[in-house]
Image (cartoon, rainbow, N blue to C red; front, side, top):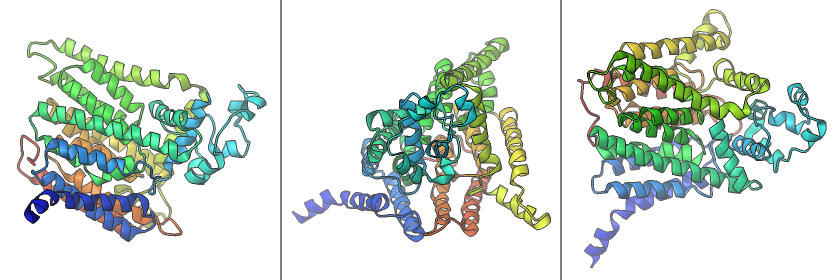
Length: 475
């Protein structure tokens, strides 16, 4: 009898332990508790490794566990990020019929409508804007976020509006709605990721390096970042492209860009894939037809993006959105790698921060790297294309002035379909960046930043030196 109980309960004991760790992370952890944060993260990553490597668990058992871990966060408010307060702000404006791009929360609370707005609005229209819990949302997002214009693309704004529509007067209720959308997107990634792995002849369990990864569960489901929604459209698009359905693949990439702008950087890498992909064409297909399809693909992507932005386009929108995007390159700095080395050299040689100059040069370097990846490496097959996308986006982050932890979700998912595993390691060590949030102040620990990128680069260099393999690592 005892042996039967032990046989039945033994698989559930480690699962119960994982649930306890996630509960502590979601409901007991404060962002300033660096030791506790890293300890819980290490325990969860160890559990993820055990679950993915343990062949006793079937695909659907692992899928169910991934959903269960996400549902544990359902009634929790994010504890590592304040961004969701701004999401709720923008969504409530949109439900009111007001563009969230026209003024900042600070301007609204101080009753200081911008001149560009008053040119088309009356004072009574401005006064009629209704923002439930305005002060609470502003205090939650913080003065830094509240003093800048929104930089979230339209489809992302639509998600915020859904939360406002269903729960426009409750911060927790709105957070739950956003969380449900993000969980559904992750389930979509699981579905299309599985289908793409099947089509590529790769191990299906590889998708769980994403779906069961505690970094993904914490940063997306827990902290309500919408990289998962963006990646859902991207991975669906890559699956359709692999099946030769490039028209709908282009539409989906356009939708992905309309959630987060980051897939814009990937577009050049599709160039040679369209001209030489053996799946899209027969050998005798003319170069003129291939070129026409390539430009058709880009045109559809662009048209989808433009149509999504069309309801908001105005002179004020263009100025505000561009200024907000520019801040990420020339004002903000967090968890950077190569940029921090350049900054240190600047302080040592000329005595001040070079961010405004370097912030203009590094994007040009990224563009040059992307063009080299586009025209000087083979991107013919789907795996070659995804590998190119992985290295393109990784180079962008390594050269960025700001790399928030949730950004790593993109290279992590792409790596599932390649032989490279450095993004999996990165998804753990990026948690070191939270050491910047002390109990009373914000101050980056550059030793932690250096350790993070040293580990990532060592793993990357090791993988680059390995003999070439035709498939991803078997798990």
